[in-house]
Image 1 (spheres, rainbow, N blue to C red):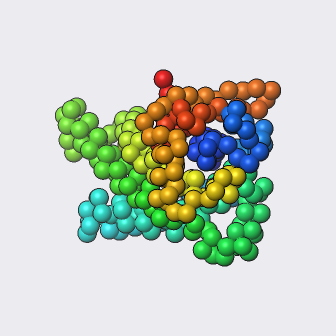
Image 2 (cartoon, helix red, strand yellow):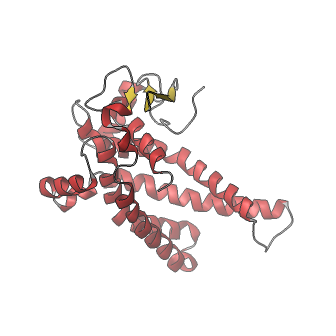
Length: 250
């Protein structure tokens, strides 16, 4: 819940063309969707994270000895998608301004799209979550063993500070590798906030994004405060769409 506003900013930055229905080409401002969008649905959607974490780690621990860390982490990630996909759909659409509340999102999605509507874009979500979790666990084990070997403490445990550093570093590596797919997932889930022609598939989303915005340039992503509202300025052609709201741009 603490990082929810930051995650909301990431969602806004990753939505198609860096703007919603109410926004112009001059940049993205939270005044268009409301500063409250940073915490909209925070408490309710965060409940999903509790179930997602329990499922993921329960499956991981139950299968680790039999499958090994790599396959066990993949099994945990796949299982948790039963909860994580609906969580992402319900969380991201209100943030992007598609719906005004958690209750409105659930009611509208269920009435218009049925149960399957909560699993919209499940393929790119799994394509992001599974490699993310696998990379995190593998990198964590690697960094832990390297640290213990470097300090000649094989067989012992890391300190709290070392565990924190290893965890952050592992998540950073996993995020760098899977962020392009995360952009596709976000755009598929929130494309109702755009006035442009909808994507026909995840592949079409990736192809269109790369074609119209480029895949190698990185120019400007800034967050500022003006009149008590947050302004996130992006240049659709100048910012690397695969690293939006993840890497600092020079």
